[in-house]
Length: 453
Image (cartoon, rainbow, N blue to C red; front, top):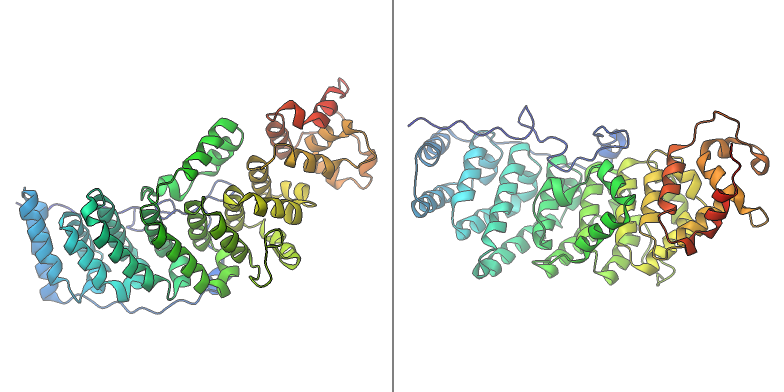
């Protein structure tokens, strides 16, 4: 029988699409590319791809014809796949990064025994990052990780698989920044994290969520609560390995954290790490300040966020990658850390942030994940209404947010007929009025005292 055509990879030209490797949609609804200066700040390792020799190429072409062109029982298929992987020993980089042979390699990894699968990954350890950052190689690694997830259904395989993942993780943490900021490598790391964390290796699920879905959840408290419960109920497969991988990766990347925070792909790795550690409060108290650029010296609960750092964080809210990251931080932060972020970072900046294209999503996240129901409503009211003013001005000022900010005399700002209401202000009020009445009395007073016009 003739050889089956190779299945086409994601993207019409064989590349990953933005969604395939968790590419994030920007606030205008289009997929954003990494900022040029951010990419330039990341040191990239050079890699010269070696061609596969003709004899090896011919061998794997014949193997492809055998395993893809005829029906073979599972036992015989596993033997053929295992033998072929033995022939790949020492040539893993060339084969995995070859566009054609890498397809065959994926099929072999799907059909071989767990012993041969783990053996292949161990043989890749010294060049794992190079393979993971390659267009074709990343697909090979993804296939291997998904195959490992399937083998985990047999508890007898857990020790072997954990040892293999530990070997890979130790290689990654030696120089994690390159792979974290690479479009293909970022997705591989996030899949590895998810495998350790016990969630599906599905980029459309845990890795990323469309902005429209996130916004819908925030405006529906019941849906949002269910999402939070999903994070809290994670059953981690290898919790110690997950903690090691995240902690060591961030420790080695600490000097480059300023780049990772605003890099599209680096930010996605940080987001996935934080979500998977949602229940590890003590670990989060160490990790989140480090991600935000705080020093660990003299840090203690209630004083984790340095004032000098606060001034640097506010401008970053305008960047898509960092705003997504801050949303996740607010979602998983322990209560004491959330309170400190609320007071120090957002206390006097809620409305300037809510007027920004990216910052307004962070403000919505702040409200959605408030630890006390009246926490954000009081801060919002104080931001537009002075202590000596009547609360009746609160709702109009939020509804006409842009006009309020542009007014030189804010105390006497008026709203002429026909002025368009501010969309973000309207959404914020929509969220506020979902809270219990006892927490939003000033808002109720304001909206009930409005004139008919």
